[in-house]
Length: 248
Figure (cartoon, rainbow, N blue to C red):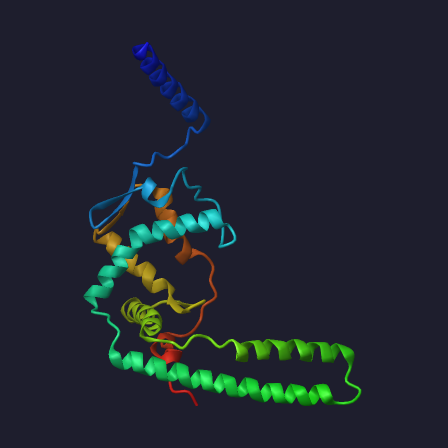
């Protein structure tokens, strides 16, 4: 009975496997190598790739599934290239830069609080004016509530760890721009050396340090650099970050 039970289990798994394969003829096995970085293989399972990539599809961040897959591919195959670039360029955050960042942040916070306090006083005067139109009063009270919220819930005081989170990424973008040049774009956390990072990867690929075993993966790896972007400054834009500049 035990032998028949074991045989039945084996038959079930074989039949189930064939059924799944029939339903998903283009499924990508998790152990398929999709690329190599410095000789280390990266598999489909490493990036969560389960189906072939359609290179004809255009998408942006609203297509969450494709966007996240692209990000995972870039991290798995691109991050080691960038990390070596950082080491070779000896990019570190200095104590002086941290001190300047903290001083600038403090001055900006003081300036913002002063401006918001002055604006609140001006709003109070406007609200006290006779014959104030109702629609304008509503807008003023909304602005008043927003400003009071900012003043009553200030951001945490930046520390050295926060400073490093801003300074090192900026240094990486600046050094990429200095080395390779090209377009700069605005992103949520600052300027990004768009073309320079692509050129870094292309140089690694030309040197054999970065290899792609799947053309769809290569397409997705470079997709972000090749999609439409709004540029954000000239070649010198990364030389003067806000957090190291004096606040007037």
